[in-house]
Length: 84
Image (cartoon, rainbow, N blue to C red; front, side, top):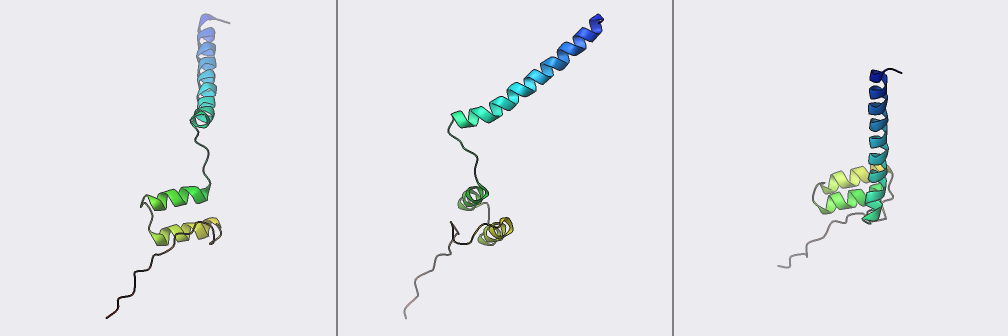
């Protein structure tokens, strides 16, 4: 191989190694920090709790994802009835 071919091969190997290291860090660092992958249900609940979704959007997304209506559904609170 000529000198230029070795340089190209070394750059290629370097890029591949960086991709491998980056992928491993992306997998293992969150696990080491105690963050686990979230289920769609948990993600929706967090977004709704932060106010990113309206109740209608939240319920529609749950329905679109096929999440059962009983588990963790946001419930609308009722105002006490006014007595006159």
